[in-house]
Amino acid sequence: MNQPFLTELFKNQSYNKNQFFLIAGPCVVESEELVMEIADKVSTICKNLGIAYVFKASYRKANRTSANSFTGIGDDNGLELIN
Image 1: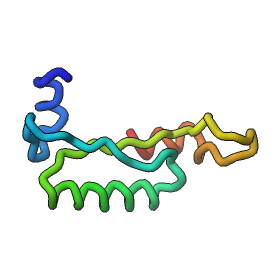
Image 2: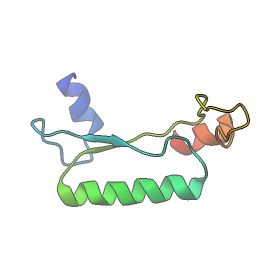
Image 3: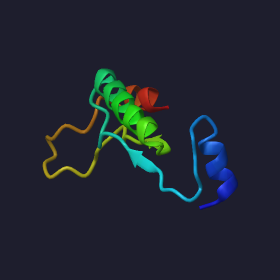
């Protein structure tokens, strides 16, 4: 991955180019409360361990086994929360 891009991405975090970084979050946005809780907890753990962190979540989950399965809280709402 491009080093200047990573330096910019992690400019507000402790970042060591010789160490991995974590990209993690819920599979799909279910609620603002859950998104914020996950982001806060994972971010805190990463800060304590000195690991750079990128929050990731999908605003819509389309690959469900049933057409009636939950796919998200709506495109606009989901995108607003993770933007």
